Amino acid sequence: MEFMRGIGRGSYIWGKSVHNVRIERLWVDVVTGFVSAWRDFFSDLEANHGLNASEPLHLCVLHHLFLPCINADADAWAEAWNNHRFSRLPNHPRGTPLPTPRQLYFFGTRQNGVRAVEVQEEELPVNEIAEYGIDWDAHDNDRVLRLHWERNPQDEID
Image (cartoon, rainbow, N blue to C red):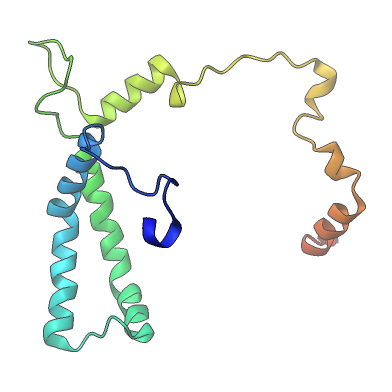
């Protein structure tokens, strides 16, 4: 990467990776619990049944045939993972039940807000509520209005 893009761009992180253990562990679970079965299936189609992964038509047929099944498997795996109990968590009090990932997310957002961003309540004067969200600069721009009406013609009223 550094040979192609140059040194000093942050393209590669040197040294021991100690801060991404959780996501690395999640990827192990994703691959072993879900991805490996599909990877093995497609490898078998290539090795024994004439699938050519370089052929766009073959890929199109694979998408048509298997994408709904892959998506359903991904959803089922995610649902199971989100509802499993952790075997251990750092700083979790001993003797209390361990939460599920779904519970951690739910209670974390309840306690800290989404992305831990505090939302400031803003009181709008009653006379501004009807105009809330209107981009007046775009509204007064003839080019923007012309593009809007070209792409969103008015429905005829009968």
